[in-house]
Image 1 (cartoon, one colour):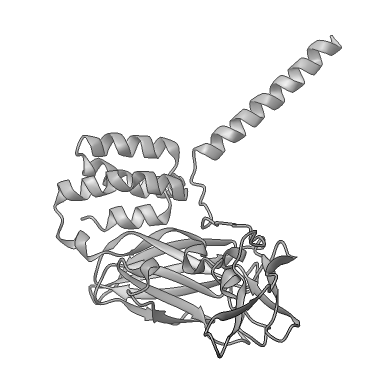
Image 2: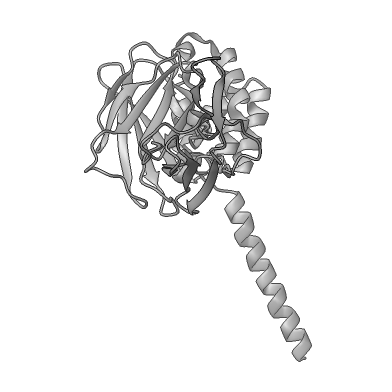
Length: 314
C-alpha cells in the first residue's frame, strides 16, 4: 500500500511538472539580448616590441614586453592588460568587456495624430548584469527618424562608415553624464518617431568599454584582441522600415513568413501560435492572422512587437 501511495505521489508530481512545462511552452518567453561572453587570454605568440631605431643602420631595437591578461572580476567581465613598458616598468591598463551587461528589451509602437508612429523601447539592465548600462543602439530603415532623450540616455547616430552599423541608420542612445547611471536592476525608456511602419530590426547594448590606466599606449598585440562593437549584446526589436509602406498583401505575407524564425528566437511568439501563423501565411492568408492578434496578445501567445508589425499591415 505504501509503495502504491509513493508511486501515486511521484506520478502526480510528474504530471504537475509536465503541465507546468507545457504551460511555459505555450506562452511567450522573451529572451534577453545574446551575449558573446568571449574569454580574454594572454597571447601565446607575439612579436617583440620596437623600443627605438638604430640611428646608424635604421634597424629596429626591440625588447620582450611580456604582454599578458589577468582577470579582475569575472561577473563584471573586467580585465587587466599588463606588459613591460618602454621605461622598463610594468604597466597596467584596465578594461571592461562590452557584454558585461545582461539586457532585456521590449518595444511598443502606436499611431500618432500626425500620421506618424511612436516607437517606445523599455531597456532593462537586468540584476544579473555585471556593469552599468552605457548605451542602447537600435537599427532603423527610414529617412525621417526623430529620436527623443530617454532618462540618462542621449540620442545620436552611428556613422554608416563603421562596418558594424553600415546597414540602415543606427540610433545610439548613450549615457553622456557620469552622475546619471543605469545600474543593474534598473531600466530606461527611450522613444523615436517616424512615418515608416514597424518591421523587424536589430538592436544592441553595451557597458562602458574604455581602456584606461596606463601612461603609455597599449601594445598592439593586446589592443588587437579587443573585438569592439561586435562584442555588444545583440538581438531583435521593432523599428521603422520604409520599404514596408509600399508592399502589397502578398509581399507582406512573405515578409511575415520570413521573419517567423526570428520571432521565435526572440521569444515573441508561442509555439502553437507560430505553427498556426505559419500555416496561414503559407496559404497566403494574412487576414486570418490579423483576425487573431488581439486575442493572441491577451492570451500571451504573441508579444507586442509581433502585434505591432501585423497590426500596421492594414
